[in-house]
Length: 218
Length: 218
Image 1 (spheres, one colour):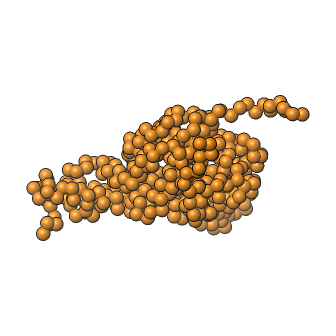
Image 2 (spheres, rainbow over the protein chains, first blue to last red):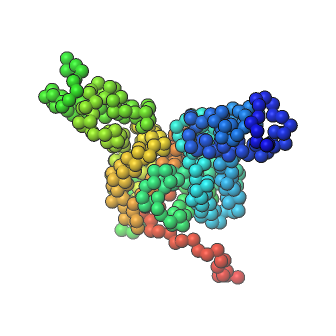
Image 3 (cartoon, each protein chain N blue to C red):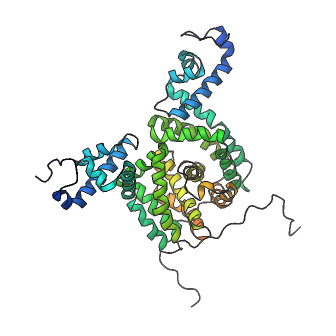
């Protein structure tokens, strides 16, 4: 009966042996709780109950509710971290590879749920937004920016990310047609050139003054 | 004392005379309530109280809570409807004009609040998402699409919209740096070419097979 309820306090020898397994179980429970109830209505106690462990064990492994949320984000976004490999494979075709990778992630129902949960929480709760901002900055955008050979690579990575986040909003959250039902490859074809430009091209010239140029051939 | 509390029931002669004014006051109250409390926690009764009118008058002018929400969205997005004039002024420079118009809207604190309120409500409440979807489809994207001379203009309008919605998310909601503090004109310069392409260019060729082309000049 290894699943007998634990008592409050420092985890016993058995729990220490179970460490990695219990940690994974807590994380899975946290993802499910945050996804179902949102950040505000999720508690460490509720996560512990869903994982079948004592709340003290949650605190032992993760610390505060924000820390559990950050860890759940990292796990939820784990597949997204492969993006740096996608970008790092070289400039040719990187826009197309990135668009396909990103849409593939969202088309996978197992990944979409946690992504939606995180974005919803960040939209409506400042603490969750701060955690997401920290994670996105520290893990995701920095990795991508490190692979780019453009001016101000972090800004460029954010512009590319903003386009993909917006597509996710309109396609998967608000579900505007025809975007919501469009074939993913159709979206890839249209969006890839914009991403390619952000990730590989020099800065465009600022728009010229609207003074008409002299007509070269009257 | 024209502001004496009204009694329940059909609006009296005085209220009918006050009609347009009372309607505006209810709408302003609805925008403020939805912005402050979100869709779920806003009620027709609360809107009526904030507007200083009987709930029956809210029902008289608008109908259900969804109907008030739709009307509040329309007013909140009223400035955004000018987008069709921005797009309709012709294809040259339309991407730049659109990016500047959109960022100008969000940079205006008076407009940003209602826009954020609508997006937050739609992110977390299916009824609000349905109302926004109906409005966005019917009023905003259709108008823009009608001005475009491209294949599948609605899809193109949505791709441009998705980019701008994503920028709003990262810059104003999650507030990722350096995007959150970037000069708006810098964003316009970078983003304009992507919007221009969606709004004016023919479909790009789908990506070719990754078979290398024969070298034309050995």
